Length: 197
Image 1 (cartoon, rainbow, N blue to C red):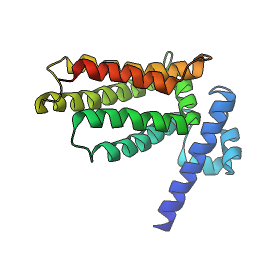
Image 2: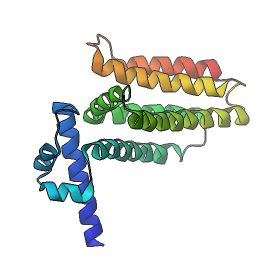
Image 3: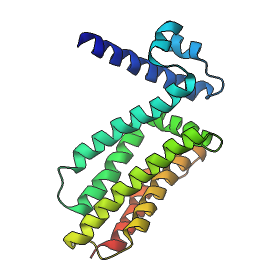
């Protein structure tokens, strides 16, 4: 049990070190040696957990996204009302976004590499489908319960996903002159107002 926890702790240290390296140097300039040094491990110790830089890159995304989704789902699963669940999902996502801008900066690097790398594109496609399906499920529950009017839940779910992705890109690519969280809330309210009964 102790060794399992020790391996988990070393993996976490590698992920955190890799996150710093990828954010500071970019993917191509980051080496396994840099990550090992940053994690205070030997290169052999790093290879015990990961076989390549790309494996670390992909696993880092999976690990952190799963961690955030688990946090969010723990909050929304306690709520009955679909509108509250949708609002809570977005609200918690935005708080996690604000508190973990290092990871979301990494996400921009990850997303940009998906243009040329089919493995990364496949991972992002999975994330996109999971996100849209989660939103669609909540909207469908709202329709069945009578809280939302009959609507194209797939398109509404996609609108919410695209809204969040737009916030992510804008936050890291533009010198914004507005409160991005306030704007996101405004836009989400417009979407919810359009589907509420």
